[in-house]
Amino acid sequence: MTECFFPARDFCLIRHGETTANANQIIAGVTDVPLSPLGRRQAQALADQAWPDRIAVFASPMARAQDTCKLAFPGRGFVLNDGLRERNWGVFEGCPIGVQPPRKDTPEGGESWPAMLARVQQAICEICSASEDALPVLVCHSGIIRVARVLWGKGCVGDRPPNATPILFEKHGHHFEEKQL
Image 1 (tube, rainbow, N blue to C red):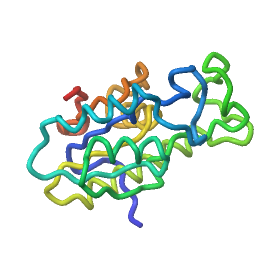
Image 2: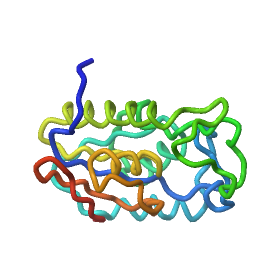
Image 3: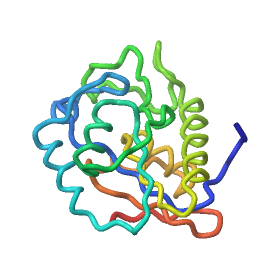
């Protein structure tokens, strides 16, 4: 595994469809929760999205991301990538969003922010490198999109990204511009 700091190309991130935890404002980082009925409809609506001729689809191993892939890209294969999993919030898993600790704090039993930054950076760089001339489309989580913003965007996590909305990270020199498709 070679170390990579900057993806070599444009890439697209999609947060999974709404989950039951999202609807109830519950922290579900590594907790496997299902898509809500709305989340299933959101993912199905992605099937109508216009894409470039060549895309390479990757997904977090979490069921909500895999289910979003299956509904959004029917009949198309996708590759699971463990680096795209959501952050482990440790003792805060299953708690209301309102008690979530600051991002830079390491929750007891959870993943540190620096570890998440390094994991996601490596995963996205490897995926971009392996995608050849296809646009990498990564079905992932809010935390993954926020890491990409910190590493290659404006340097801050920004607002929670919407569910089932493609966000293109377009390469411009040594930074990326983020835009919804």
